[in-house]
Amino acid sequence: MILADKIIRLRKKNGWSQEELAGKMNVSRQAVSKWEGAQAIPDLEKILRLGELFGVTTDYLLKDDIEDEEFTDPNLDSSVKRITLADANEFMEWRKSASIWIATATFLCILSVIPLFILGAASEIPSVGISENFAGGVGLIALFSIVAIAVGIYIYTGIKNAPYEFLDKEPFDAEYGVRGMVREKQKAYRNTYVKGNIIGGCFCVLSPIALCAGVFTENEFLITVMLSVTMLIAGIGVVFFIIAGVRWASMQKLLKEGEFSVQGKKVSRVKESMGTIYWLVVTAVYLGWSFVTNSWHSTWIVWPVAGVLFAAVMILCNLFVDKNH
Image 1 (cartoon, rainbow, N blue to C red):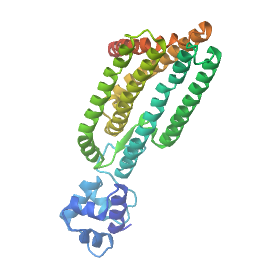
Image 2: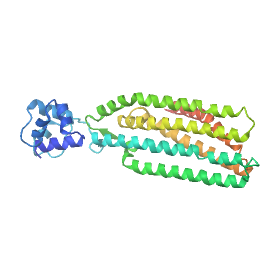
Image 3: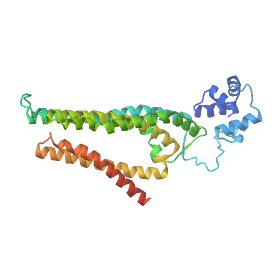
Image 4: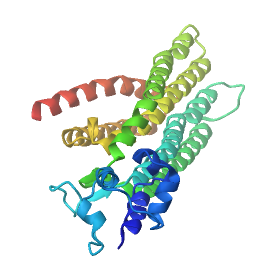
């Protein structure tokens, strides 16, 4: 393979256009075009720069009989998957879309119990003419239907994310230029990430105001409506958290930083398992209590209490993980 073909191959692996490579080499696009068309040969200084830029040896660039890339890192493990610039950009673009899907599914899960709450409270009003059994039945149908849509979205994002699962499960290396590019994107996104978390936090903190306002009335239906408004506002806050967090996490994952470092992955797996178990238990308690007592209008208290206790559970989880690592 001649030098011209190797330059084309390496440029495309890194996801660069001729203009981008020319900018990195401080030459014109026409010069790169001539190199790739075998109409001109870079001088020695440019050869050395190409080797540094692509992370390959000058022997690989200059010797036509060397077909396989020879990287300048002597410790590079060829069995470890290497992330190119194109791979990194594709992954971050997908996670940008996935953040919307995941936020939508989570928002639906939060709102799924609202029809059950509203119908349950309405059944207590004689003038409405809805029986408790009818309200409970329709409310449960709505709950499971909405959750089914959310689960479908989660499954879809999981399938679409399958090609990138190795980032969590296997060691990987980034080709030359990938980390620099990701850091630039991370730097540009930082303000948006901070704003997303601030807005999400404000929505979550302010969400109980609606429920507190309902305390000043003895109308149970109005209290239930205020509870639903509280959940709606909290759900909006969660959406901001997820969209900002998923996009930020995609960059940290490529950089192997934060919770995606070797130590961070261990901590994250423990916290994720604890969180899953916790909410499954809470859901089981809520449904069990509600079915046994048929008091759907009052068993909703499980959710705000569980939300408050969840913070305590996560703090204890962090203390346990820190103590054992």
